[in-house]
Length: 308
Image 1 (cartoon, rainbow, N blue to C red):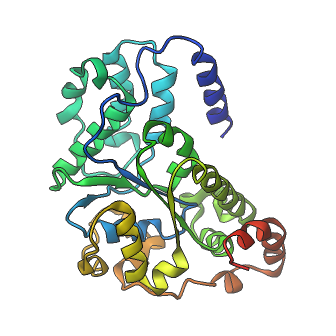
Image 2 (image 1 turned 60 degrees about the vertical axis):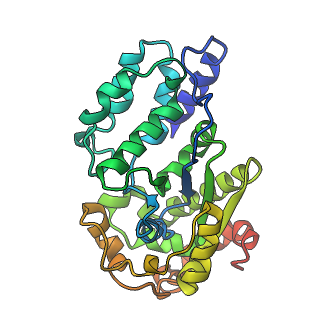
């Protein structure tokens, strides 16, 4: 996180200099993407799989390059376009571990080299990447979106590129989020298996939501409502995204892509119908001292969303 803060400070300094390439495109897009933010362990992968059942949507698995790529774009704004493209698109080489997409970046690299004039911007790069990923996965022209929880950390950067995008914030009781991280594996979630770190992450995500809702329209969806009344909540989401609800979206459990990420132990519920058994799990999974910690840290934010 310290590196991110330093990078953002350097970007502010570099902003005083003339920009060679801009973040946003000067051309109005025919359709805007959508981003679903949250703390992680909040049902984002479940929502990813459900929305992907819709023929007009394309949501790849989680990725870890958008935020860093936007930052790098601004830090290296002075170099030749070809070299900047190599840096950004280099993150898409699967060996970097930045994603688990079924995607061949080599097929589109030369196209990016040939961008001209107003095409040379970060927004256009991301549209190019996601659009071509959709093409390669059999959904040409689909409205693309992203549900990666880590995007929440880079919410400011994403909004700077896509101020007109559609935004959804998927919230879950912070105590349940903390409990879900606690029962995960250290090799997957690192220090987030420790309740104090997981609760800090949840609070940071709430602060990001509070920032974003001052900037634009954000649809707030509660995980608890989504699993209890999936059709009702999905209709709200679809209305926000400008598409029609399709009942086939709820028949997702037998159509989960055979991707390593979706088959991780902590995503085993993706292969079963929606259920509410994880709601309130913190009561069993957190010990008394952890419950006291949650009460002292999370209470103001839990009250904001009527969890207490």
